[in-house]
Image (cartoon, rainbow, N blue to C red; front, side, top):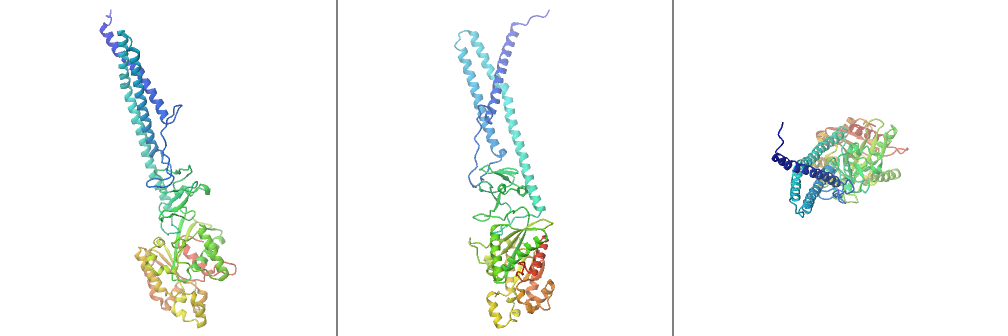
Length: 514
């Protein structure tokens, strides 16, 4: 027969089992409290006690945007700190409460057995803490690691989204140009479609991945490729130029299509403004005639164009461009959307400033659009060429003198190109369209000139003692094309054929075929 266990073994078993059993029960209490407190810390349950959410500021500030921060980049870490602060406090309260309860229950009883049992239960408290601690630590570390992995995945995702957005825009040839200051815009300010508050650095990052939520609650895309897909105007953010002290809006649909930047330069009264007006009429006529579409990209362009067209129709002339705009800066571009029947539509910016600007290298330094243009339009008034001017009779001269350019073409060209070179403009990689205006006034000297042949016009100009200028054009620009134009309207209100021919060639060189 097997000998019965000794009293010592029974006592040892009691000493080990009873605290473990008591500790297991108390450990379960701790785990349950942990789960309930964690749920409450995240705002779940009847006793919800979630961390306060940091509300975004009302407007942009240093390092802050008026938008909700992406959860994983802000609130998630505040939540985890808040939850485990609550857990630590609640578990401490549970331990203290249990310890006091044991003392109150057994310390007042004189029987040694009661005090012994109270001691066992207090040992069970320590045992429960020891048994539960690894689980709690693993849970804490696990949740932090999980959030860390999500954060790492989000960071990888946001850079992939940025790369995707940039790649798509590059492949489609999309750039953003400010129609007011002429600067190339990389990251435009976004006006919230709800409250109109301006947001900066709108791209995948701290304030959202594919979309951003404004402080007012309105959600809008943080990727330009997604912004282009927004059809409802009330849901589309307005893009603003960030380079001026007072931001100004970009042209409508900027960042959604390729752009064509056409700077017009020439002497005062060379006919730049009238050519610009008729050029836009020609583009509109050709686009709609071929089944395409033409729209103004902003109200400023529409208002100025309508005014100039009315003046041209009534007086055959347009008002001279003032030296500065009413806001103290150069006039904004004439910005239009041109959509051919086939092919990608383009946002066309035609920059026309007063000819007096090209007399001053200091003022020219403000023309940032010169640095990004690939085609330049140089307007020559043939009446400013001495040999042409001398062909007019005295009375005719007196009548034309007030409206003609006084600066000789080679002077304007040389000074302008010199300043452009000093600004870092790569003219040798750009095209030059030389537009001889007012051809309707010099028909008597064009008898032997093929007005549709660039080389013939070039030879004619060379024969007017302008050879040095012509050779300088070939030297400074990649490609030079010559045009004879008459910036007038025909009886149907359409642009003269010479301007249509000029517009068609210039836009075709920029990839827009009408």
